Length: 335
Image (cartoon, rainbow, N blue to C red; front, side, top):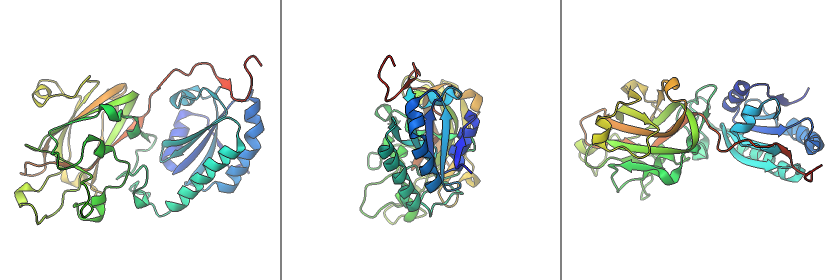
């Protein structure tokens, strides 16, 4: 029985990216000679390394699944893409058995390292690539890496702590191992507000995306010998979201613009283990998003400090470029 999964729909592929920690996708075409030549080597790797819900090998016919090929900018065959927790982490273009084998066996090594992961919460052991603090929504992928890191802006942050890019760090927050205090003597890998409890975060994307939901992680310490109780930071409570702005909103400006959605995070929404709240969005209002503004309006207490450790974004990645003419790698032009 073949261990390869033939992809027949976009929904099937999205579901696999959610249910299997690692997914290898072979983008091929029936008319592609190099694709046919490398197929036996790919099937052999699949038979050796496939593991239920851990490593899944798939085949995607680009003529039948053009939407999937467009989503990942596949323009020539064969193209092999390796996904980890729904995110592409490596690509092999062309019928090169050695390169393909190296990429897949590296994946298998990573799978062995992360066997101790907490699948229920989406938390990977060791704080590796792709840490998330709660379950990934079924049928959707993490698209945090679609943000434009150079365009990030964060207003009212305390300069003694992290920067905007800190919120998108792919590693596990250090405070999960130290009661909200981070690593001893190390730089803070979280963000705190400065003059009051508000934060304004501007997130531009590299392409047009669909945003289904958010994860916000906040790990304030229960106590801190270096701070008075009224100086301890709070978790966010009210969050206002704006889409497709060309710049970060000023705090006064936000008061005059209706939010696309306002969210109240209740105390019971925070996961007790990871300090993460899942925020479901009105998906129909977040279908063509080029930028997202997250306005943290207030917190769940009386402090004037607000703390955010991580932000994760889930949905569907958009097209970075047009698909163009499909070509097969390894053939000379005109053949």
